[in-house]
Image 1: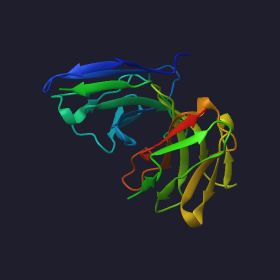
Image 2: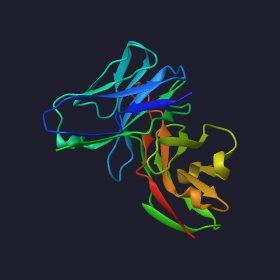
Image 3: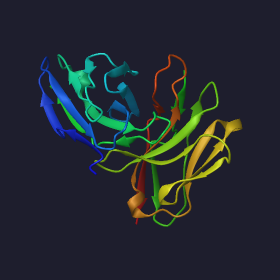
Length: 113
Length: 116
């Protein structure tokens, strides 16, 4: 039981490049989330999904896209990377929503230069 | 809009001493309150949560928190800290009020340093 896994762990992008952050969970959770954590700040919700085929915006969705084709996978797509997207990205999952325990992956540290 | 304030950015405590981390929230209805811990290089882990009932809640790793509605506070405590408690601690409140979105609002975190 691996829990929530994220790849890559680190990535450096140039301005304008695109990339996909991968997230997979093996707990059969219906809810999945993407957060970003800027230095000295709390986590901010980018997008979330309540099940396969259903996604919705969080607090800071601009510049990102998501899809949820399976229960296990919830990739986050960055189009036209900007320095403001330099952050640590966390994927999380839960059964039944954020009022239940969220299980977090180890994070992806992204730098946009 | 809902918000969470953690007034202390850093706290230093000697090993074996007691600990209290402060959390104040602003929320328009009955809040659901959480404390999460983030060890270096790791994702967040739930320590405890409060929904209703007894205002003193017990969590994992010997932590407890007390909900005080009159003070809009949910402070985290531990009677005796261990070196392994050094981490970042986040208070959170939910659900998002209005708009139907799922999610929690997190504070900025308190960095706990343990002195030998």
